[in-house]
Image (tube, rainbow, N blue to C red; front, side, top):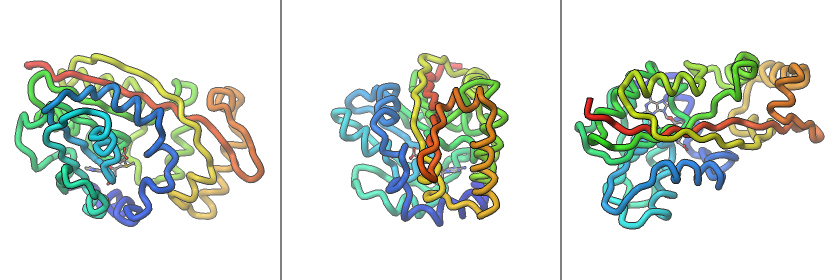
Length: 252
Ligand SMILES: C[S@@+](CC[C@H](N)C(=O)[O-])C[C@H]1O[C@@H](n2cnc3c(N)ncnc32)[C@H](O)[C@@H]1O
């Protein structure tokens, strides 16, 4: 079962999820996700940790003749928001999915792995439900580099204490290799984010909000430059690094 705090966190945000978020419907991020998925006619897709299944909705618009589409999430309230009858909702934990082996041609998992009990268990499960030569597409916000990582993780943990892991590109590549996926493609997309919008989506405590603002203002120069930080009135704008990885399930 998914962690109860994570479940509560997303259940209480399900009504608003995706309506106010800058990235869920961002064209560049959607386009990167879909370009790595490359779904062919008749192929089936699993969206694991789907939220409101925005990836599947976009995939059904972009690709012709998509086969079975399953949207899995730990929070049933997220699945309640899905309106497209071609998408089947499934409540479950990505680390122990109530789905048979080898059912899917493509599995996608975007911005989920930092909440799961074990990243490797999630990868093993994603591999189990894929057919041999099926594709796994991971999309994840990661630090830009090692120098950026510690400071960035301090900020995001304050913003969202339910996070379990601070995931880097190397962690994702290692998990892919540990679970015998062939890494077929890696790409990076920069997304612009606003602190005001962040706080609106996930209101932190007053103390945490103050601390986060302070961390941005007093950040090392390298952090400010890497993230292209800009103070606009009472808002702070900064960049996020998205990484997208396509892995292919081997026969092993
Ligand atoms: C940040 S949202 C991302 C939603 C979606 N992938 C997207 O790109 O819009 C994270 C989602 O992962 C789900 N989640 C968190 N832990 C999970 C777990 N162990 N198993 C399944 N879903 C989980 C949450 O309920 C939430 O809907």
